[in-house]
Amino acid sequence: MKKLFAVLLAAAMLWGLAACGAPEKAEFSLFAMDTYMTLVAYGDEASDALTESARAINDLEQRLSRTREGSEIRAVNHSGRAAIDSETAALLTEALVFSAETDGAFDITVAPLVDLWAINSDSPHIPSQAEIDALLPLIGCDHVTVDGSAVTLDVGCAIDLGGIAKGYASDVVAEIFAEHGIKSGTVSLGGNVYVCGKRPDGKPWNVAVQDPQGDGYACMLSLTDTFAVTSGGYQRYFTAEDGTVYQHIIDPATGYPARSDLLSVTVVCPSGTRADAYSTALYVMGEEAAIRFWESQQAGDHAFEAVFVTADGRIACTPGLADQFVPQEDASYEVQLLNR
Ligand code: AMP
Ligand code: MG
Image 1 (cartoon, rainbow, N blue to C red):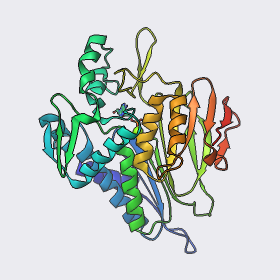
Image 2: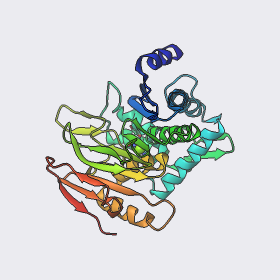
Image 3: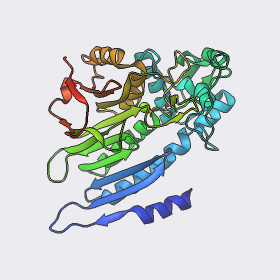
Image 4: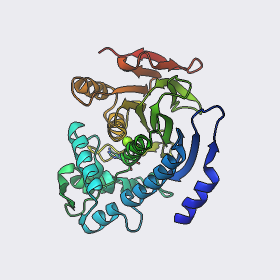
């Protein structure tokens, strides 16, 4: 892995020392956490920031992966109890809070169901109701106990951080950027975007919300210094022989892939981890409950903005994004601004 990392570093890093004192630009791409990632930074320490960020992402993957030999999460799932790094323990604790906040729509204990359906694998499986029913009692965050650096799972339970790891990685990268004095940059970790400051020309960054039904984009958001995370059934799915599409986000209440009336949810807020958890949860909830959840969070510390692309052809946008929302003229969606 180290070798691969070194090769990627050498191959993908492009240095551009622009003329006339313009800030140094560094750019880096890598494949990690099962997705393509691109990082761009402007600043005197841009190259160091990206080298450190790439190393941190690889370290996180090694720690948080469910399948990697030697990973902390694999150890927890294998033995039902393991000592973990304090940062991982803090992330698990946060994940349990997100689960409570979203009434279980976001739930890291979906792991046994994720394995049963195996939608992200080469051999997905359509289980019987009996197979699903056998696993449902194992789902629920009360099966997880974090005590200091020790994590314990009830027998048969397992955890999957796939719904939060990339968002967490984007928070870690944002910290590294700050430590290196980076005032401008973008980080795209497969649907998880962090925009640092403004563009070098002083304008906001344009973040495209992908069209879940096509190759282009559904709309654009003009954003500064924030995180924008998208979840959607279109990102990973398989189509059965009878034409039924099974997508990768599981409804923990039913054990089935969520049958959402949303095609995608983009959450914009100052925490990548939270945006990642919420976007997954809101997709599971569906439009009505997602909007109720958005309303319920407005008054507190965890307010967020969102863009919902609905299965019936609308883009519903929360009012806090009204000034940042840039419609895509060719897209066929009807745009709606939600009321506060
Ligand atoms: P995301 O792309 O962030 O929406 O996360 C989806 C990934 O999280 C899936 O591929 C699973 O690994 C995992 N996952 C699936 N359903 C859930 C859920 N309801 N809560 C938390 N994680 C989930
Ligand atoms: Mg997520």
